[in-house]
Image (tube, rainbow, N blue to C red; front, side, top):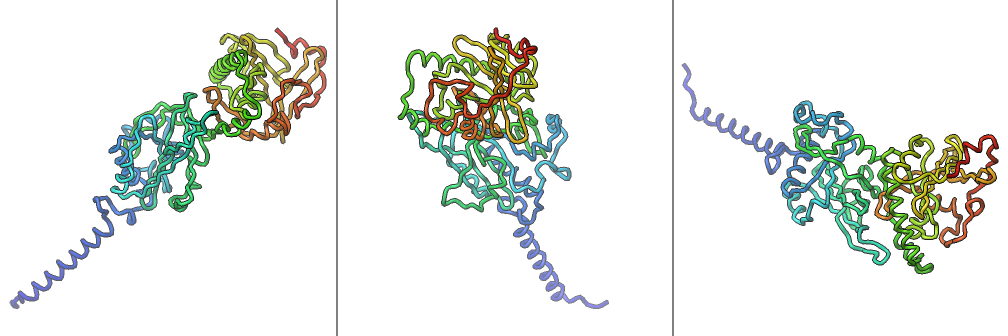
Length: 454
């Protein structure tokens, strides 16, 4: 039996141990991060997203930030019965919600439930995040007497390698709704920090109803989400918010001092009450509406209701018409004053409340324009008011979240011409509007149906 050379055996063991040690060091460097989590360079894009979201939730949990998920893509993947996720979903081979190979995930933060903590940035850095805070002016402090320049945090972005979490800060406004500001980069900020153009929130300000939240488990992570996901996603698509133009309104009042008479103050008070009542009634019917005619002009020009208008004007798409609209307003305590036209042509309703009249104009869509009609009761003459096509945005008037045409200037100029910024107290609805045109006469045989005055 050959004699074993102990020196050779010792050398082989030494070489083997060294190779194994080098392999362990390589593995540790390439596959583990400082805190023991797998290095994101070696993870798949799917797994990296889940790890970033988990780290983010750990971070905000440490600072007691009341966040909830508003990511459109992730919410869109959820089943209708999201409560079932609590028992069935775990992170693993079936990870599908936070494993969609996306560059960012979006959460919301309710500012009312959170006190700003500058230590958040330090904590984020300790977890390996690159951190960006974006601020903007606080519109809640702006008004006729104070064009506030105070800034508040609007957006936070946490980036870790290939994925980022966008945290949108929501503030409560006086109209009992939630608002988030636009995301605007300062000149010295890194425009390549994340793909800003791809972010779902921040291209413009947005307004939302306050959501009821549900605590659930998604891919094994405890997360709050809007309980009514489909409703929230519908809001996302139509959330754009237009701020009142306080600077321009202030300039307007310098040229044309506000009417502060007792009569004007009383009218504004009654108009506010009527507008809130009309909003509750139409919202209960699920009918979209917007500020139209003089009420829209008052908001756009002077951030208020025009006192000498004597009425409140609303617009509604005829496709949203419901036959129970009149009974609904009557139950709300607003008797019908007149009904002109019919659903197929030039429908217009008017309700009376104390000394303020509510006019509802129904709008008809054509290929390249929209219009609403008017009727002269004593002659049966028909009129048509032409507008360029428009979309709807949210705004706030008399502490109410309401909609207005996004293309407000075009809408106002169509109705009031280029001189819309000059007050006119004598107004003839048949001839004064810049966009009015005659539209024939109602046949006498239809008068009982299309001309109803009470």
